[in-house]
Amino acid sequence: MALHSKSPSNSKRSVGSPGDFRNMVDRELPHYLALSLSRNKELIRATKGFMPPDEGTGLALSLHHCELPNLLPAVEIGSYAGLSAIYLGTVAKEQGRLLISVDHHHGSEENQLGWEYHDASLVDPVSGKMDTLYLFRRTIELAELGDSVVTVVADSERFASVYPGEIAFLFIDGGHGMDQAQNDFESWVPKIAPRGLLAIHDVFPDPALGGRAPFLLHQKALANGFSETMAQGSLRVMRRDPE
Ligand code: SAH
Ligand code: MG
Image (cartoon, rainbow, N blue to C red):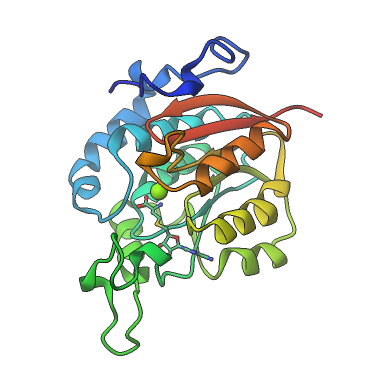
């Protein structure tokens, strides 16, 4: 698995900084993770979603390196069919941590009819809406992660408004429109404890390769007390600086 060599976040600026684990994906994985990913290989292959294996592995490794107590949960915004949850849930299970995976399961803008990432097989014929909830539940069952993954079916901002606690790890991979991405950032990032991690997916420094919103969130985090610890494909992981 090669690192995205053109990524500007591979610059010298943060390589070698304390807690830097950006090259980990190319090295040996922890035994439990290697074992579990190989056991779930077919499931990972068969699960619909938007998470290439190198980025999924990077995501898993970043949670593996989260140094905060396991009482503090990890939160994922954007469950879809559970592909990223296999990676995060595997590590959460090993750590004795909970992964809270939040999605209204009606799809993002780009999943709707007429858009690039629409999958007609996921439209509920009765409601006429996209519905990925049953696929998510199936994936979590098959990956044997039921005790470690809390499934929240809700709008992410609405759920944030009633979720009072601190979190150890946040993965933002929900709606990629500017308003939605900003809402996810504003409502969830303040809950990340000092030294907690923020992972953002679909960060494309080159506008020709993808939408702007995740990239702007990445820039915003770096300007607001976060330092980068990993770049893998379009995945960026940052750590909140100690207080
Ligand atoms: N992490 C997934 C992909 C997520 S796709 C994977 O690994 O494959 C983005 C998801 O965000 C969609 O399932 C969509 O329903 C969800 N989403 C979009 N806007 C949302 C919102 N406001 N609240 C909750 N979920 C939202
Ligand atoms: Mg994504």
